[in-house]
Amino acid sequence: MKKIIIASLLLVASLVSAQDKIIAKSAVITFEASVPSFEEVKATNANVTVVLNTKTGEIASLALMKGFRFKIALMEEHFNENYVESDRYPKAIFRGKIENFDSSNVTATPKDFVVTGKLELHGKSVPIKAVLKMSQSSNGMNLSANFSVNASDFDIKIPAVVSNKLSNKIKIQLNALLK
Image (cartoon, rainbow, N blue to C red; front, side, top):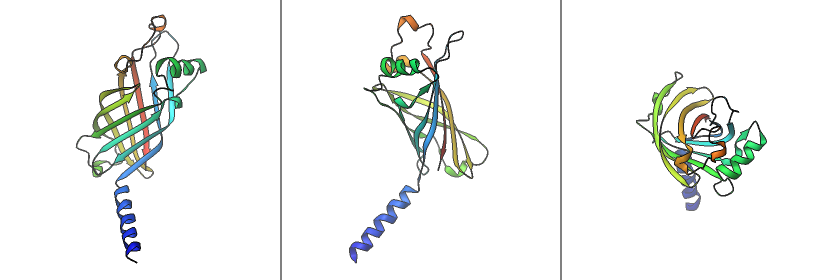
């Protein structure tokens, strides 16, 4: 009987702490490294995981690199084999904290929050500071962000032969519905 009570208490305790976290398993990240007058270099990954601790404001995201889809298959192949080396570095991870986060301040009207953290990609960890736009809906908490990173910060080499067709500055957009 004692074991049943202890097991029940542990289960309830884990459920209470789990309720502090909301998750999106199909968040979308789009990145673009296009240069004007050349072919669009853009990809989307619709299977990104985002977890937010609503009590602490800690946020994390995981994207598998092979999940990015391009319009042109050859671009996808070059991206995975030559640039991000997906077999060697299979994922991108962001870990951070939303400054002064209070989930009660998230309403139906989108509000800006600042997030700081580190983006781990291609074996490198780079500090990131971005604005998150957050709002509450009947379906969950909507989150979106737009920010840029430099490929060179992650030691991603752009060969000279394509350097005029591919931007070092990568524009990233994230959209998630956390439940």
